[in-house]
Image (tube, rainbow, N blue to C red; front, side, top):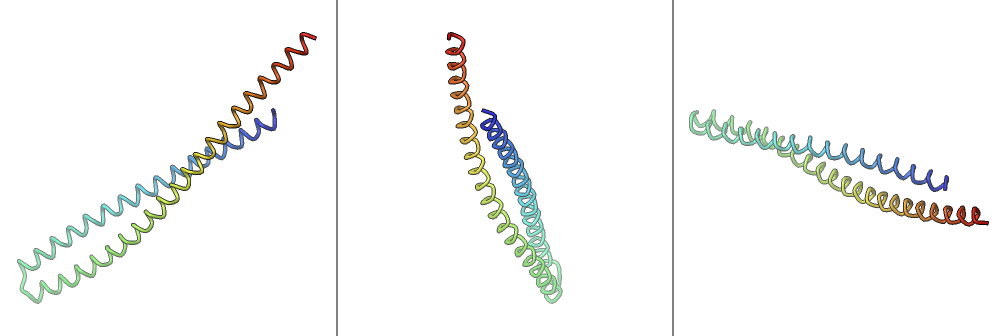
Length: 132
């Protein structure tokens, strides 16, 4: 019984560690999504700048701005690709953690049933001893 309780406690600790890891992964995912949204907004601003440069400036100046904006936009696109890769990695990690969590929950439930069964058996033995 003590051994089973210890195993149950260990499972509970493992479960809590998985919950904490899942929370950290979710927070990383949220932060990454915010970065991606910021990149999208910056890209939209750059597109507006390009459009304004084309309509308001002489051709050579507009071309220079456009080249600069495209280079800046390309850097942001590269960063967005890296962030998308990170999101995929975080989603896979989150999925793995959720599977581990489900397994830990199942094992904990199995142990609780086993402990309850053992307790019933012990109670029955105690009743038999008392009746003797």
